[in-house]
Length: 171
Image (tube, rainbow, N blue to C red; front, side):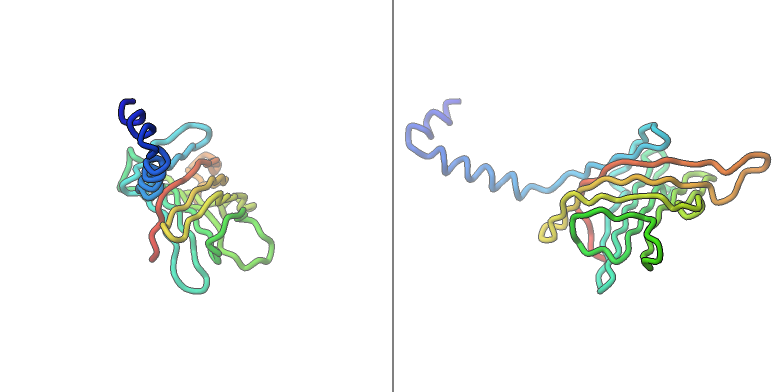
């Protein structure tokens, strides 16, 4: 409080506020990754999870969220091909589009794919992207089905949804 009073007395509050904003805007973004599986929250391991965009003409956005309780498993992977590095909605199901947009989930002995459900219903909503600092923010939702039914039971369905905000790497 004394510092702000002293700065205002000297007429330096604008300069100080500007310097504070510059520091905040260049600070690294802490990963904020969420995952719910059939309505139940699942802790995400931010050290092993990653967001990547491939190089080249047909860029691919890859979102890989690894469960905190099982960092050796693949977890949830979402692929959006022909990603234009732009804000927008990217639906999995686009008839005759030629796009590869799907999700897979691997945890323990469970393997599930969005394409195994028949509809391949899913959506990634990119809400913000900073191509200079390589920061992306958005949400996702998808329905996945087990690749193979367990003996004596039907294929299980998994509804996944969540959000992501993190830096992405270029590969």
